[in-house]
Image 1 (cartoon, rainbow, N blue to C red):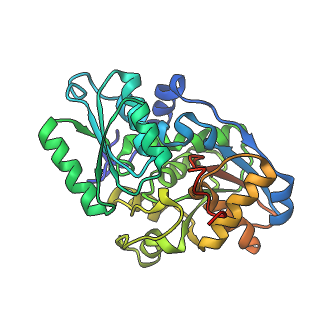
Image 2: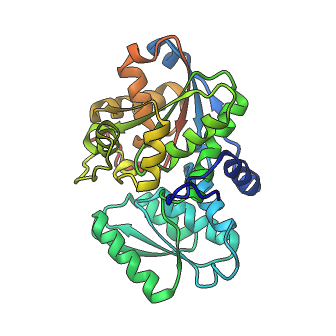
Amino acid sequence: MNNQAVLNIPSVSDLAEAHDRIRPHIHRTPILTSTFVDEASGARIFFKCENLQRIGAFKIRGACNAILSMSDTDLSQGVVAHSSGNHAQAVALAARIRGASATIVMPSNSAKVKLAAVRDYGANVVLCEPTAEAREVETARVVAATGAALIHPFNDPRIICGQGTAARELLQDVPDIDLLLAPVGGGGLLSGTILAAQEHARRPDVIGIEPTEADDAFRSFKLGELQPSTDPKTIADGLRTGLGNLTFSMIRSGAEAIVTVEEKEIVDAMRALWMRMKIVIEASAAVPVAAILQHREDFVGKRIGVILSGGNVDLDDLPWLG
């Protein structure tokens, strides 16, 4: 990676190298359109369906890039990660691809479907209290006890480059995009999307979308200083994590804006795509769709690429059944 200041901010060449590295191990997911969404928004929307990716989410891209770029010596004691679900599954599968052991620290309130999937990929699961502090403490304990290499869920240039390959593929397939939208939790996907936009000739604007109930990125972007994530309550469980210093730096310099949406808007958007497009998306993936449907005036007339980040849903706990 290129060294830019202390943060080791990745470059567009790093993004291209990541894409070459992971291409044999990921799906090139389809891009779908919806007449319903186009008419409702007054825009032309292109959905990059990472809900159809391996492990059901974009996270496999970053995990594969990180683990496949490591030396055998670095992997000799295995890897460890902490995650509420999708990064957990991604690291578990990427470690299996590479033939390395994996331990995943997961909060006790993680979705059952994600817990089961991580175990199915062969990883050892260690449960912790559902707080950021508990995750960090338990992960540090595992690292100290095993010597495993930490695979951070977002604040890592290798992860960012891997995640950015989703937007890179979208822009290769639909080059005349005006605007890219991605959900933002820890900021790995949004940072990678910014990198992909910088590589593209048209340099489309990039906007991050975040739940109002987990709005640390919005506050950080507005104030120009990294703000903590404090007790997020959103249904979008994949977006409950706060930004890191690396992702904040990239988002602050490269994003056009951060937009927030309410919980009802997220559920309505999730249900709309299930019903109208016949695809399964999780609540986190519905967040940018909610922004388009509920804030039409900001998007009308534009050609917009949307990263549908994942489709891992507990079918026994759908938000409109409660």
